[in-house]
Image (cartoon, rainbow, N blue to C red; front, side, top):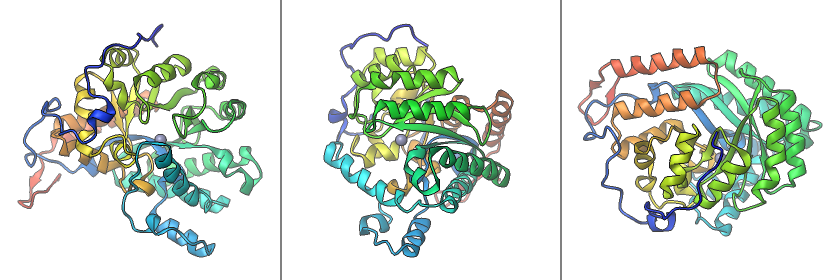
Length: 388
Ligand SMILES: [Zn+2]
């Protein structure tokens, strides 16, 4: 953990606004090779999924079924299966939040909560995930199950069951919201602390989500201190909607183990250097960045620049329900930027190393990544290939 994060330096990387609409970088990421050669099945690549929100993980089919059962009329924008696309401003966030809230209102019982956890684990299992660290703010579901304590305990129990059923380790991150009072965050941190642990069905970290522009970052520091004293990792969002100045605030006030997104730290190389030196990993969610208007196109997400700078990156889907893009899709985006299978395997290793799993589990999954890479793919001649 750094003792100090350097002040602003002259940005040499493009700002997010400059990056919008800019052509894809011609500086290929480390290990780039022409696409189409030696490509393995990315769904079979062992990986960890470290940035996924509880309601945002919902399957579209589940959403429509729940809406039908409760006779709720859903906006067509939620049903069409197209990714949400909003500008990176307050109005854009409002549209995103309204869509999210529509889905959240349908999660109104213990049964639905358990279903969501299990389906997220099943979907992760199908995409090669060995470890899912899912974020939830139990406050939203508390009214339906008798309070935030039962809300969290239901989710933790469901996570333990989903682990047993799918083989994917499902651990939970309790996330406070920037749009609520910091005292609420402290209450959540105390609740999270009571369920702290390392394993599946336990709380492994404490987060801070919602609009990065809301609230005063330092006001949430006491909540993170409570969580830290209980051994929980510090996992706040930062560096998606706002740039280096905000990332610097989050790093110094909340002392993160990982940054939710953090992608815009790349706009200030000195800051990124400090983040890399401090061992802070970045949970990069390319589809989310584009859907929320931070970058125009997936090729503009500066994955290669972050990797070349030494950042440890864990790709995540964030809210696949709204972005129509799941975990493997993020690796496909990385491949489309020119990362070859060696570089994609290194990304998967980064996700595993950045997870909060036990070291013995990490060693096993890292060996499985080596196995994935050791098997030469079979060329199908159709532009795709399969791993035997
Ligand atoms: Zn998020």
